[in-house]
Amino acid sequence: MKQILAVAALTVMTAGASAQNINKFVISDEAAKKALIKNEISADTAEKITRACVDFATKNNIAVSVFILSPTGEIVHAHRMDGQVPINIETAELKARSVLYTRDSSHTRANTVANNLSLQMRWSVLPVFPVSGGLPIIVDNQMIGSIGVGGSNKDEECAYAALTSVVGPQPPLAGPTPQPQQPAR
Image (cartoon, rainbow, N blue to C red):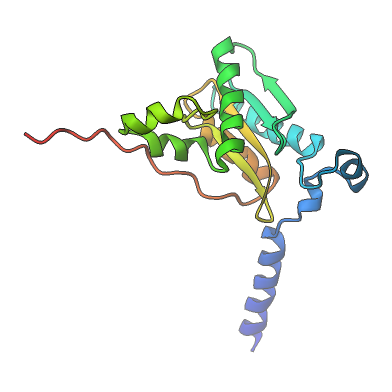
């Protein structure tokens, strides 16, 4: 009986610890009335995510640029670490914007177009940058914004570590990009 109670208590504590509360991460009710949108990432949350990403980058001896966008595409927070060149900054924003357009990770889109020249050409006119490093910010099964990280070889890992440390569990990362098919001989 004691074991059953202990397991039940642990289950309740674990469920409470992993549960997300969207109201902790979005703009206040007063701000939502002015903006006419509720499930929009708050500036405070965006800054915390950015800080967590910069901490990850520092620990991994890399430099990154970070963009966090609202669901409507407005910049909520942006940061460039020292040593970033213009293309690092631009790609970070492109990755975040791609997520808003597709509603999934930029890595998932990279996997979709890999080895498909026809699809790559069709997508070239869309505002989608199919390179890993852009992720949706999901809380309580709602996308409250997007993050784009550019400038390193660990952009997606940086974004994911930051999101999970600040807002909690996120959708799993996309698998490896498919390798090119070799023609039959």
